[in-house]
Image 1 (cartoon, one colour):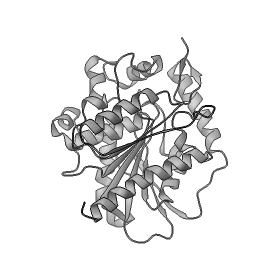
Image 2 (tube, helix red, strand yellow):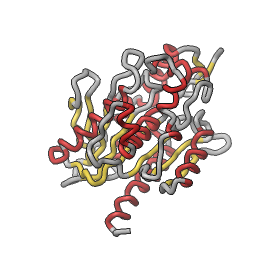
Image 3 (cartoon, one colour):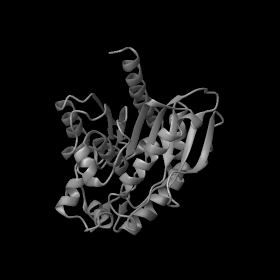
Length: 307
């Protein structure tokens, strides 16, 4: 049975999923270069594995400590790297942020909860190296796309729920919670058959026991959030295969008293695809990323104003 991959192309296996996305992401970024107004620090090690590397991007003319965005890439746990997110992340840096863009270990070689372990290492690295790279540790934001949104969302749950963190074997930095999140075309509900056959196949590759009910429950974000969850910008698109999950998740956040914004981009005839916001050639991506960064800056202003 043919199913849809995150790129929107028809695929029939995990291997085809990786091949399809590699081809499409290469076309997406063809011809792009590092902007002249960005300074980048590349391939900094944050852990022992060869994939435990990150980049830091800053506006070239900025001085002092900047608010920070940590980006968690998607790719169904089996695909993705910081190289595929570099132009998107540098565009965020152009909006006045220091941006951390990292790779993490992938399935099927590395299983759940490895992405959370690596994400946790990045935040420890950030706090330890804030003075070196000009990082404002009072204003640390997280963004993620697709399963990356799931990862940064669940990591934030671990920061606010010690019991869940212990179950996952993750110990976040004491007292640390991201200031706000950008959840982009995210995966919020996870159960067998919830999305499509491909997602179930990816889950088999990702989970140590192949996707038991308990394993699915581990990463079902809606099951783990509480009222301490960070303010969130929840974004989707009309052509996003995960679009049906976004508005109910936003409504859940509001019901818990969590500050949130919901945005669905696209229109009839231009529905926009899953994770369209990382395509720097799309004007709609600029609009979306402007909106999201404005949401982050509001969180800083709210604190500074004592509200």
